[in-house]
Length: 296
Image (tube, rainbow, N blue to C red; front, side):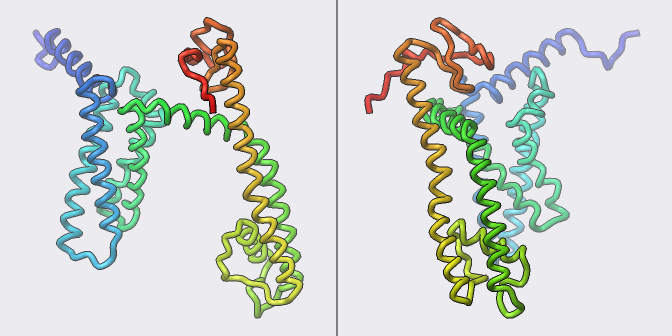
């Protein structure tokens, strides 16, 4: 007896064709349909963020809140459908779900499940604005992408130097906070405990200066003045570390272009001439000689 619930070969073929078409529209930004889909999606995201901003304003009437509530349900439903379609059309759904974009898309739709139960949790949907980064992929803004890679690699290469520096900053804040507690400590001042004094030291070193805790004695003011001056140096040091790394990367790229070598933009590994893939990370290499050297 023929199984009525078993799909026919024609139905299977149509289903595969539909998935391929949807995959092209959803994931392929190079095609006109894919670019159009992404632009509509980004427009919905921007509209959703604007609704979020307006919802946070005080003294909104109940009618306006109801209209925005309905709009939010409609937009969130669109995003949920879009997320499920991405999973369905993906050749490897698990890879998409566990990817950075998949996690961002999932986090962006989670607030809809809290709409009926919480008044403020749904404001977490502001995370959707991260999805606007897709603009760089839609319009192929390679220059910005390259600069983003350069900044990321500089921060990555400087992370250990910055970590060591920040470790000494923390030690300085603890020492100065403890010293200020000894000098200014008392029930009548804001330095009522060592943690509060350390908090004041961090606020002062970073030149934030809330003013909720202030020294009263002359010696305390003298220590505060020293910490304020140190704060400028503390801000300048990490900036100098990252800047020097950016300059070093630019020199490496110039040398690679001069020697017609190929440098990997992902891990900075210099590969021999004629290499198509990075010997370190395996990513595709770009042709360095096609990038004109900046004379400035």
